[in-house]
Length: 109
Length: 112
Image 1 (tube, rainbow over the protein chains, first blue to last red):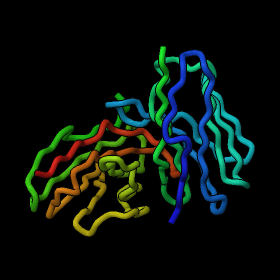
Image 2: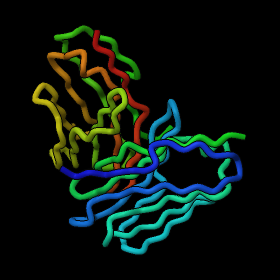
Image 3: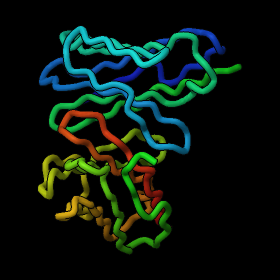
Image 4: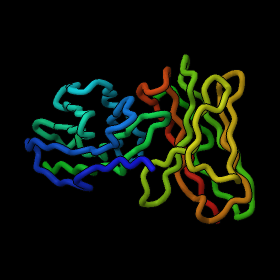
């Protein structure tokens, strides 16, 4: 059974704080690691697809790193804003995309 | 609008009934995926179709079936419905396997 673990489960930060989350996945049979952002009452939206060990991706204030040998990925948000409030999902791809349960981020003004 | 269209948005039906959920993928995407999100659970993979053929299967119940048609739209059929089948059902599509998924807005199924 493939297990994708995310921590923490939830996070409350003040506007302007930087924050990061962890995604752990099996290090064998790796093909790709995805990050999604899921706002309440909307559908998940792709942030990054990462395939190579050492990959670093950036989109505005959000960035992600990947370590396939040890099976983890970090998502960083610099200077959090209230509009960053959402659940951040990672997903591990082999022959199917298996999602973690997400980190729920709330940013208070 | 993500480009992935799911209908209906909401569905309320009784136990024992059968329903069909429909998904039209984003233009150009050949792969369609179905996911279930039950209360307090994450997204659970059900099944994938690629260009009309079943490509991968998750923990999909035998009461559930799916297909992808020549125009690439897909249908998820749920039969002999039980209260526990109440969930949000998402469809997603992608250009290539392993590429980023584009999700539809989901169908909320309530079984009473």
